[in-house]
Length: 88
Image 1 (cartoon, rainbow, N blue to C red):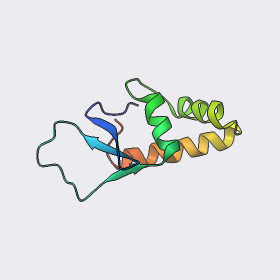
Image 2 (cartoon, helix red, strand yellow):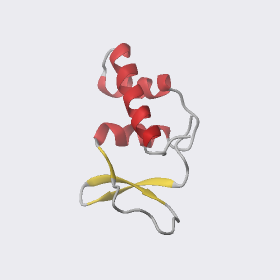
Image 3 (cartoon, rainbow, N blue to C red):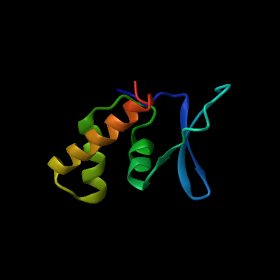
């Protein structure tokens, strides 16, 4: 899977916000805000194909958590990004 290239993360007033680049008539009633962990995953995985395990590896390396917990957390992040249509 891959984060769609039309989406970027921008810092606005201390928040990590996902914005669609070059989209006319964007629906600004739906704002996607990323916490620090979600923003870290975005930064590390954007621009390349990745798996749930790749995302989990980022979490393990950064937070020194167990792989099982990292896999569960990564799967939740992926599920939420897919529900928003950000990951293809």
